[in-house]
Image 1 (cartoon, rainbow, N blue to C red):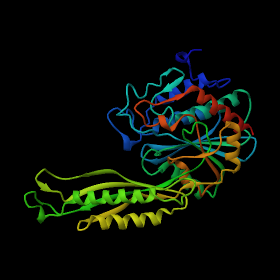
Image 2: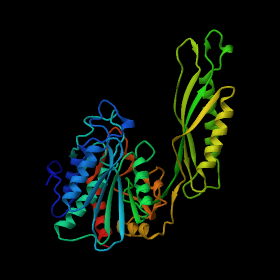
Image 3: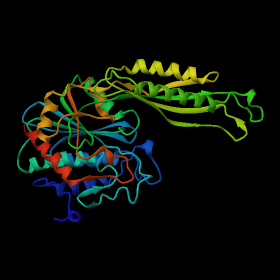
Length: 394
């Protein structure tokens, strides 16, 4: 079968070509996070994707529930009964980043050159296709996974404070339930990831005083105050980068990622907005860093006043666990890759209270994520499927 002829069959052996066909079908379902919405987004948010997963999982015999987290934005929970009560959860976020900068049709789902192309193909609909294909393969052979598998499709990973993962965590806490193991799907080249930085965001509003631009001394320039804040944040980043005593995840980082303000070309600006992102390394506490940055911003802005808020009302310490834990070790043996840490964040930040072991794992490279051209290699889908076959049978 040629790449162009690959189909998404759910029966029989899950070959790389059949998984590619299934992934192609998923990529053609737009699920752009509303915070990334634009004219090319198609149907916005995750509802169509959640419905597709629910229908496909139910056809395979799963107990399925849609849980609306925000209007029109449901998580989907699909439980596949295993031969034991041991529970393995696989979290695959349903949303993608925006598509306005992409080349060609972002939802084409083209299969060619040994790859599947389109938004979400690597980040991270690939794992959804892999897991469903392997479960379908087992069902066709009259087999059950050894453990009970909970496939969790979560909203809002690409923006909005990991709301879907937070809702799944809260659901488990309310029911007094835990999961022995959670695999968080992200493109890691099938390397088991046991740690990554946490983070927080600061939304800063600078309040100056307007004046005629011919008399700047009568005003308080909010953009100038913003520039001083940027200089202070840059100095803080230099301090962080110069640290020698850092943990496995390296030094924390901080940067100003958004800035806006001004009213007219002849008015001293009385307002300015900034967004500051801070990555939290192991050994750091996000609340201490929040207080430090807030003090730094206020001091740099003087004589302007500032309002500082924690973005989404949330901050998270780093995700980190022993690289020798059972799940990490098993995935390392199955994949043939040594465990590693990552420099990007994931839903794993939400699950420390409800999981004994957590690992971030999936096919493809993060380097292809969020790009103007996104793709995943079919060979990577095959590697991931082989790992999941072993994981669900052990």
